[in-house]
Image 1 (cartoon, one colour):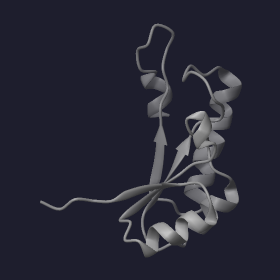
Image 2 (cartoon, rainbow, N blue to C red):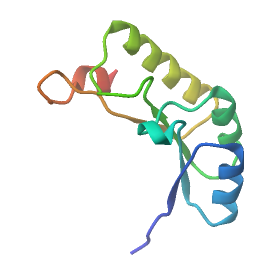
Image 3 (spheres, helix red, strand yellow):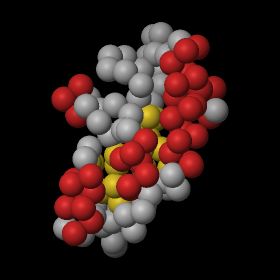
Length: 108
């Protein structure tokens, strides 16, 4: 059985250190003290060239995972940015009031 090492990073230095330390993949974010927010476009661009698969956390704000129409637009724009920079994928969470998953949004 092979174990993959995924490292959460929020800076260019973190990308370099994680790759040098043997990370198999990266999860990019900012604002870890807030539970993690969408990383900057610049960080996504650097990670797209890091030589290991990188996934961007897509979360436009702190707080719950219930998103209105404007936040949905931001989410989808951030996903387009991750695709543009050649990232392997995204990490996303979205809920409906009451706690169920917002499957229509997650699928989009």
